[in-house]
Image 1 (spheres, rainbow, N blue to C red):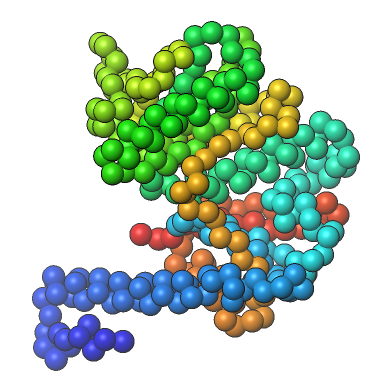
Image 2: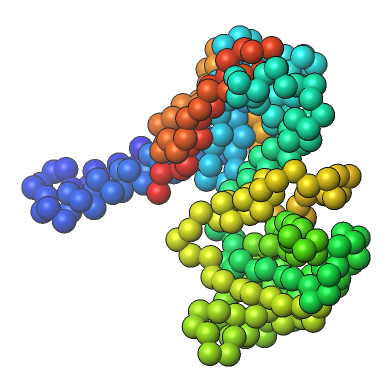
Length: 306
């Protein structure tokens, strides 16, 4: 450790100096831990081949660490765990529904929800606005609706490029009760970007987005809220067969992708990943799930301590 951190140790310290020293030491340890984690989180060191044995699955989503604790040693090529590795895990009361067609569709929705949640969390600090796009016409054809959405996306992207900025987004299509498609979007567009965002007349903190001329729009600032909840509630409200065969969400390719790791706790080097999550992060959520054979899986989500 840098000896300069102890530069005050030869004399009495004031309270302010003591606080600063404690802060410096904490920062030093955190930086060293993050350096170690950046090395250990390299998939090339952890994932290896399909024969890789593991006791834990860790999914790093930005500041979030989602950890699956298994009670047995598993192999990545173990096809019996395929549903688990595809991010679907059962509640105990649903184990008997595995072959039910409606439940299979529910699993697909849940899998998409998990994947999108991780993508949102991996890019949580990027998103600044929540946008809704609706059609004035009763557009029920998802292909037609998406064509119009792509034109909108292209125009926004071009406007941001002129400002030397990128366009980051995640979009979820949803069917309204009347059958029309509309879109819910998380974006990195600043609410104060007057080139793209326009205040609504006589409405405080309500905005429209330019370049959407197919109907109505609304824009709200993302601030001190759970951005994940904004999106997943629209994906899981019901099982809609009109989305069968279509993507349930869309996203820009410049977003950071979650990093999946398979860890053997008996390997000291790999086990440091688990210790990092447990020691350097706050525990957000705990739940017990089951694989399709009824084997218990403990799930914990951590968030990096600031």
